[in-house]
Image (tube, rainbow, N blue to C red; front, side, top):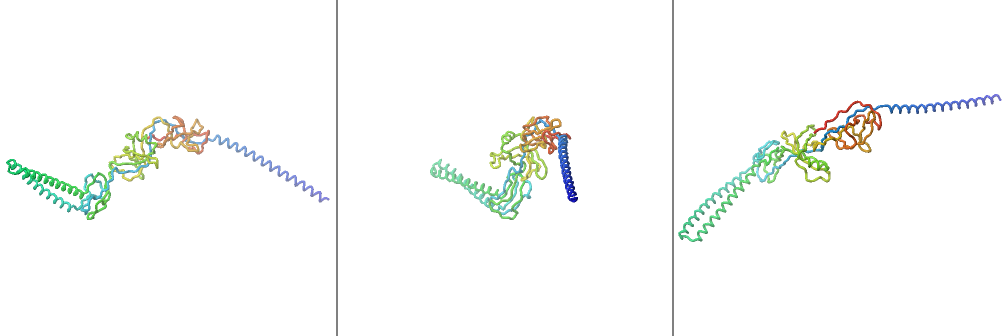
Length: 387
């Protein structure tokens, strides 16, 4: 019986112990939950009071260039392929490969002995027929004198005139033959049709060439073209600014900018595949810094627009709803949608959403939210507008 009572007391004690453990655990969990909630509220208040460090810039209203950027290729104004117009043997190559040549310079000398002999033969025939013409004229004059004294008939006088006319035609034919041979002779001295730079000779002295064989290529590079394509919506602007547009090219791989180009040719059609208009600018190229085939970034300043709003390009952000900036009002930032027309020299030209004198964030946007507070570290440097 004592055993049973002792066992009952232990069971009651165990039940109270378990109940105490459960009550203690619940109290501990409740205190932790309230502490976490209190900590979250405190953190939220701290986050709300935290100020994000940013750099800012002031929206400027000033003249900005309307500029078109494109990829351009340097092209010679004239490219002439030198071909042979006769079959012969090369006697002399009168230039060094890659050298400058002037219009009219002799480039190749061909073996012309056969045509020279033909010219001598034609000149001899001409001299003989001229002598016969002189005799026919003397005979005609004599017959005319005899006819005046009725010593010969009128038929003989007419025959003498016919002989003179026929001989004159023969002399004219001989002269034409001589001229034709001289023209043919000129083909044996091949001259440059333009001033420029010649490439590598395709033949050497002693080579036998046929008619229409390619001998060399001459390219005119002073002045020279730079060809580039512009989007078709710039057609009106390009045509309006054709005479006064300023063109410059920055050569790839050399970081060298060449200025002074003027629009010289606007193509007469727009490429339907790319929607671009081909334009060629003319550069003087006196120092030959532009070389055919070179690629470069072309910049065309069409005109200046006055009183447009502009901000550093890094101030403009992109989102799901388009482009926007953070505008600073005292120490609070607000998200402002903007419309960007173009970027020029590191500046974004804004056509809607901003006005001069407003302040925008240029650095530190990643930590910002609408209506957040900021700590302004300084102003960002402003890029020049360019010309």
